Image 1 (tube, one colour):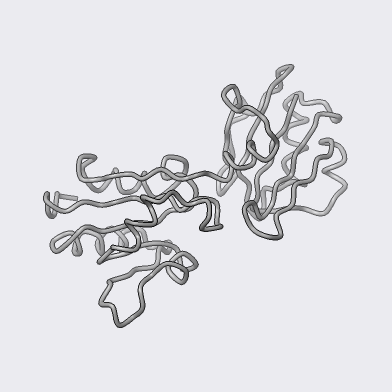
Image 2 (cartoon, rainbow, N blue to C red; image 1 turned 90 degrees about the vertical axis):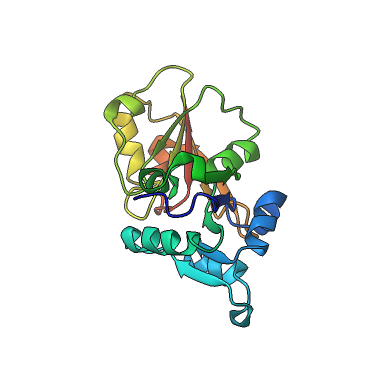
Length: 216
């Protein structure tokens, strides 16, 4: 896609794991002042200006081409703020924006990812952790292999969850008694963190769309 308006920018604002208390002030400021705002339906319901304000909004759906076309049109008149959950640099719409617009036209405000918050809740350093996503994808086996002392942080979804992922790790050499932290609804009032073994996790009900952290 050609550069529609060099003087206007796309501001990608990370809105954190869910609770607005975990959003950085710069992201809040960008969203509050946006003349055009893009984001998930829940984020728009929470942060979009009243309908009478004249703010242009678009909900992100599977029609990514439509989202890009909306952004290009709006850029002729003003900056466009794109809200993404967690941190924009980790499995977000930023990839698609980079494929459609020049990098110099994109400004990114980082956010706190659910993975980052999960490690913080456990007081567990994550500088040596492997991070993978099972959210709509399957990581390669090489990313899941066991090593003594390994720490593996995982995004999950409805189908690949706390019940279905442990057998995959065991296939890659993880012991059944390895520790698994099941983190759900992070940052919300009903947040829950449960620590079990991989073997025990397979016998529990599935916890979906949360964070798993395995410790070898």
